[in-house]
Length: 458
Image 1 (cartoon, rainbow, N blue to C red):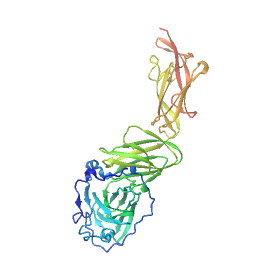
Image 2: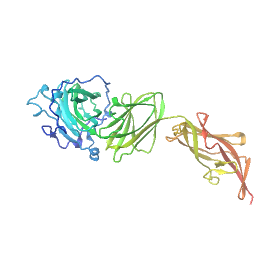
Image 3: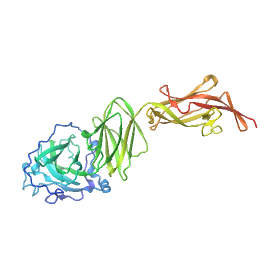
Image 4: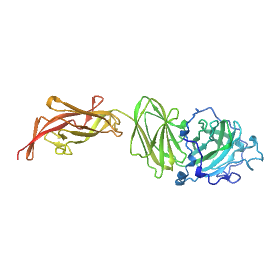
């Protein structure tokens, strides 16, 4: 994703955080909370390219279509939160000095010292999913990490819940399925600091969410092997659904992404194990995509480009290619004066009839009955005269469909005959086969009427 202005049109009115913005409910007086030790080494660091992180808080139009209204505020060290001329030890750099904030508001703040921390606290009255999104400063020498804690009101200890620690110049995102309670957010200067340019963050509550949550960053990606078929939801504008896909050997996959949520625009993006983007799948394109994957680890992220609906699911299917074992021939056509448009019966069963050219259409299926996509198949038949063989090859499409055309077929010998109304038709019955890598596939049609000529009988 790109790093840029967080708000754009959202930065319409900035209110100073003084004594007016406090948590939804009162936080009762409590003993001093011990300084929490931030966990900075427990999870893998990812230096993520710019394209991985999107400035989601700039999606003003999307927010207007959702039920959540996001406003903006700037955190300051003005009274009553600090004395005049504050020093780092006097500002909100530990839990006891945490600034009260509320959900669905965007805040701005800075860190002005090496290894600095900024702490914020909020209270929820209902259980649900918490999402915290941090847009960091645009400075490659600065790496801010994001932490979420819950206050244990029995011991007054902070219990670390989640961490997001992408590399420098990269936005952070974490989520947690959380009971009602008192929570703390910490922004930690892992490397460097920027006293001039602010970072921005917001906290979102989602009362409705899917069973795969929390899966909002690469560390929470749900592991799957050799394919994906999930039905999930986007529960807020900042929600991201991550999947870790392991491909055990080089394979071909069919990719399809359908979204049923009205007035939304979702997108799926595929990354390699270094989190470099290798492809994008847009929603509801009515077109399947085929992709070849080498053995390895991949990540897939679904996010909203605009709008969200926590009650409407999307389906993301990345289906492994499997060899076809059968075909269903659905239509055969030939020259106009012979083309019947359907199978006919000359007394030897229902078969398609053709003369000197033929177009055959059908669908290939694997052993499970699923369409066999991107499969090389060959359609062949053997005529009577000199046992001459005609064939044509093609690849099945994303839905397993195929069509082949064979022209210039030699005349039939007319070994068989059948009286039809006022004439007698002469024809051959010839074998028809469909093959994958030289192996014969089961088919609903295994022979054809090869029409030779007719004689008027009156």
